[in-house]
Image (cartoon, rainbow, N blue to C red):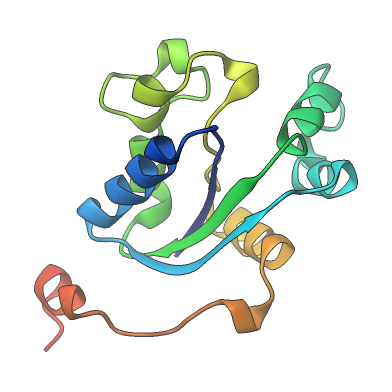
Length: 148
């Protein structure tokens, strides 16, 4: 399974904190890049929210500056990754989650994570070319998953 998330904030601390939380859990980073998505690209990414009243503002926000797009792999990465991320509304996110600790306003969310395997597959294909995904076995996998 994969999860694609984008850390958005004007300081390196938030990005390093987000990456660190996924790494500490034992997930493996297989793709990463810094991009400034166009509004048209943002509309493709959030196509499922097209009929919602906040769609245009959401797309404006996503395309307003750099996004660090990432792909993570690991057992349960989508399900548990979403727990690490926290509730969509930061005011309803538990302390200790990324949104609970690093975000304030729902319309200015700091991170996005795919909600299921099919969504992840589509989002990864939107944000990354296949050659940008790296396949490797990390030393940590032997300890985390018992692969010897």
